[in-house]
Length: 178
Image 1 (cartoon, rainbow, N blue to C red):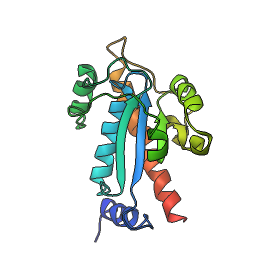
Image 2 (spheres, rainbow, N blue to C red; image 1 turned 90 degrees about the vertical axis):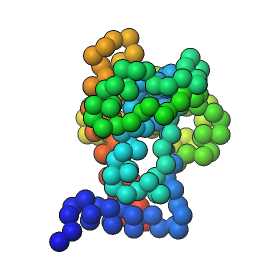
Image 3 (cartoon, rainbow, N blue to C red; image 1 turned 135 degrees about the vertical axis):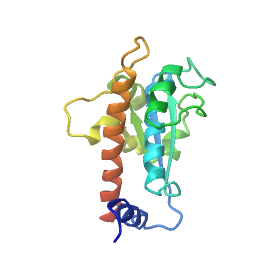
């Protein structure tokens, strides 16, 4: 008898109607060293655990260039590692104009970063811009920035896990209805 995870894997792989179709997801926060790399690490593991690594591709970027070329904040790496998420190979980059064309979903971690992205995004791609938390049923809109404290990294992980699970459920539904 197949497990629920096996059934989910078989079902989800069959969702991609176009051969070779890859759903490209970009996670965005301010500096690309705390929230967006955490969300990237979370969804990458969830995608891998479901056997969808050939169907879903994930990256992250920042709206600002403060930390370009740097690894995620050591506190983000440590908190994520304790839950089995690996952020250690990620390198910060800034959102580029090409990202609006190349990615299917561009998720801002908060309203402020969404507001920065909106005027930069060509009108034909605006439907790609969303808050990551828009896929949950909570009233919260933003994933708070833990950079200036030491206790927010676990909350970022909690929220990223919840939102990423909901997003994967959304794309499963979206592609099953096409």
